[in-house]
Length: 115
Length: 114
Image (cartoon, rainbow over the protein chains, first blue to last red):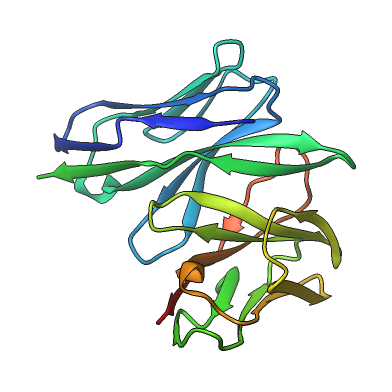
């Protein structure tokens, strides 16, 4: 059974710091790994998607890496800003019969960036 | 111009009632999902439809019945609501089911069963 764990559960940092959020998963047979952002009272926004054959993806100040063999992914946020405050969710995609896939989510890391 | 919209945003109801949550996407996607986020903030998939056909049905009580009248809509009907059904329910969609497909989420429906 695939389990996704995110560490730390919560993080509070001053503005300008570089951050690393960690995600680990128990079964390396994943289809892809996605990082999402969730703001209070709102839905999830997809930040980065790393296909199983890829090692990393970058978007602006965000960089996500994937090491399938060790079951780990990291989300690196450069020069954090107060607007980055949100919950960050990691999810792995598993394939099942019929070629379809489903996402298994971690519990998230609550990030607070203060001025 | 909301991509994935679900209504209502809040739903407060008594135990035993029947209620529905509606979801619509204007992205032209083929696949839609319902996820449940419990009090511990874990998101778990409930159902997935691809071109109006059910492709994922997790271990969900049969009091929950999804309906997809067309590929732009996926509604969730819940019969005989129980206290444990209180959660935030998210609708989502994706173009297909390939390994490059991103999911687009609605803003959620917070269901409170009293």
